[in-house]
Structures are given as C-alpha cells and as structure tokens.
Length: 282
Image (tube, rainbow, N blue to C red; front, side):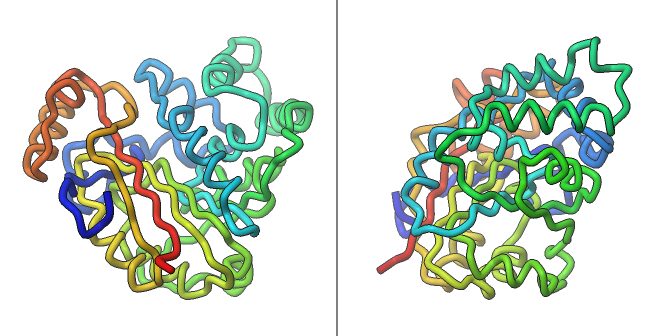
C-alpha cells in the first residue's frame, strides 16, 4: 500500500523511548544501549523474546540484493545486530545463546571483542554488503566496528537539529539502502531529512516500525527526496513481549488511537511492527 492509501496505523521502532508521540508508555532500556559490549543487552531482552532483527532479516537481505549498489546504512544500529544477521550465517537465537552463556560472563570487553571478531569472520557470507551504522550510543557503535560488523560507525544525534559530520556526509554519498528496526518510535523526519540531503546515489529505505506511532511524517519527508513509500498494514511482524500490563495497555490504546485493531497482536501480548519500504518514485 502506498503512502497515499489508507491503513496508516503507524509504527515505531526500538525500545529506547523518547519524547515523541506514541512512546510515553514504553519501558525504558537506556541502561543497556551504551555498554562496552552487548552482553547486558542480550541478557535483558532475552526474557522478552525480542525478535524483530530476525524477522527483518529476509526483507533486509532482499533489499540489499535489489539496491542500486552502494553501502547499507543501519539507523539506530546499536551493537551491529542487523549487520550481524544480514552478513553472517548466524541467527538471533545463536546470538542470545552466545552472549548469555555463563562462560563469557567473566571475560573483559576486550577479551570478548577478540572472540567476537574471530566468530563473525568465520561466519561471513560471500555476498556480504558493506554496512555502516549510526547511533547515539558511542560505546555500542565502537564495539560493532571493532569486531568487524560495521565498516564504519557514527555516534551522532541528528534529532537535535545538528547536521551530519563531514565524515558522515561523505559516507552518505555512497549509501544505497537505509535499514531500521529500532528507533522508529523516537526518530523523526529531522534525522531522515538531514541524511538524505547528502545522498549521492539512488537509495531505498526499509524500516520496521511499531504500530504505536505514525510513520506518515517520515514517509512525507522521504517523498520530498523523491521516494515513494509502500506498506501492507494487514501484515505485521512481532517485536517483543510487553514488560508489564501497563506497557501493554499503552500499546493497545495507542494502536486504537491510530485507527488499527490490536486484536491478536498487541492485545495478545506483544508489540507488532509494520514494514515500510521506500524506493525512488521514478
């Protein structure tokens, strides 16, 4: 369904809540997003069955194969999980097992990084795409780059009105695909407008966004940069379990307020996302 159609029940991305509409009732996870390594992240999200990166992998691999060359930019990349799943023969379940294994609990972050670099190198796919990452969490992106998941990483916050750094501007000139599984609930058109203003080749955007916020403002922004956005509101992808009844109540009401039906989805106990794909309009 195109942006001019019906069904804009909206979405939102990750678990880092902010001040945007549709995020006020979500549990905050800021304490796990900027650690020196991803162990706390996986330990915290494992009981919640956080699964959207695995759900998104087929769409991202397809979009990467169909892109018009260039680099993949993963927004809100955190520890490089989307890049791990895109470019390596590994599953999210294997990553949960790896980082929650008691055998790695005593390792320093540096020791874990050495092991991770070898692990991902041994599972690198022959069709791997170059991936760069953007996130406000400096420690997380530094780790993802150190272990080889990201070819380059940028710890910048474009939501505060700042323009991309000269280095990020240069990197944007070769971006052919932007991916997103976390952050749609607090990123706004400011980030996308700032980035696409420096695009140097035709690109596409593949975003999984929670149904608790509207994606229309971002799609409208993408349209000003020549991209047409399509989505199918009838097909949703589970993100994670709710942390408590209060968070579930927030999600159910937010989805209803946007004109969608939470039955069998949020009402059944999980956040759900919709896939929005934007491609050049010509």
